Length: 190
Image (cartoon, rainbow, N blue to C red; front, side):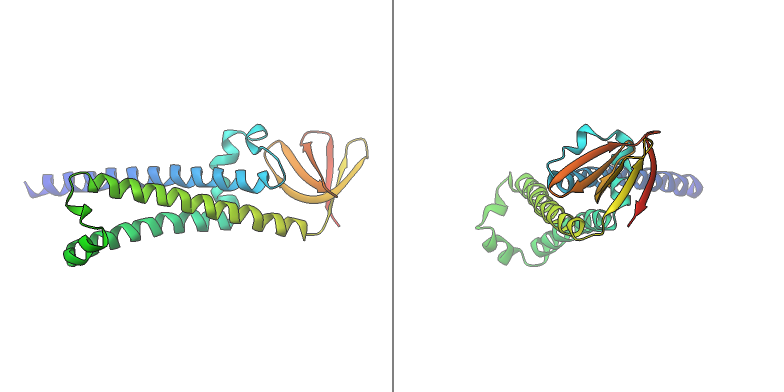
């Protein structure tokens, strides 16, 4: 009897861990898409026109800052939600005063969850906007690279980024999208 209970509990925990990991990965990929969009939109590039699904599946892991902010965002929201619950359970009078007595209403639990979701989304939008401006400054201050095409034409500029099929270069105030194919012979950092 105990073996069956332990096995059922173990299987339930494994199933829940898989669900949490899957949901977290989907959230992290969504955050990576948002951050990539903000980075490229600083140069007036709609990255969704140049990317495929695989580019976004690895986006959170291609830049440490995206991974850091995605993880920090999920942890921050979880911690704030737990602190809010702790405050509500430990000091209900002060919690009720801080919420103007609305915590006694039947809809307050839903309101609280929606408020955390909206606040998290706004936080992510602000951080992604900051990330876009920060990476633009980094890109503008980096060294130029040269790309030699198959016909020996050389394109120079600052590397904005790349997808599986396209390299983006900033030359003066112009942005170039160079397809990666047999026409790209060499990439050389000056």
